[in-house]
Length: 188
Image 1: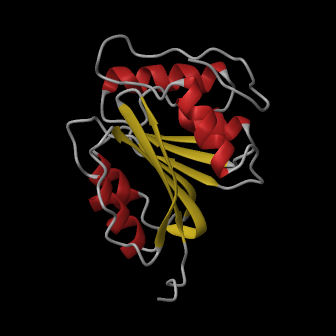
Image 2 (image 1 turned 90 degrees about the vertical axis):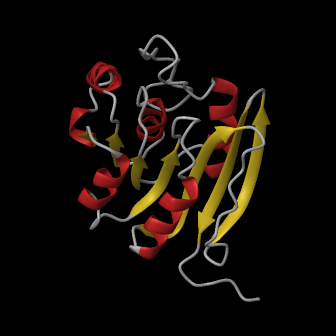
């Protein structure tokens, strides 16, 4: 696992061994970031299921201002802390070690520009989380929401008036959908 581009280009990150986390592969990660913008002009990132922290750290490397990384698994949280310190991004990252519902409530006053939803495959919570983010005004206009899940298990996003599917990628057993949030509902 490595940072693809930006100020931390080619830095190798530590990942948790075993099957508890499954990081997004470099090819898929590169496709995602090519879609949402190769470089960012600031912005706040939410990574609700942090894993190794790679997606948030890639965002910071590309110019995001700050990342909020949540991870319930304590061993994975130690890996994230290690990677954040390795890249000297401690001042630009807020770490939360809790259930995603608790994290969302704690972050209720923050509005995000980029949201990464990469829950464990057994969980089917993308729709619930997107609803929560929209209904609680936690997204900036033109925010990108990146959802990673098992291929073929796409959840239909209920907030289709405000979340527009921009791109969908399939790689092996994984699929990624990228949505863009629009504050003003689309004209029908």
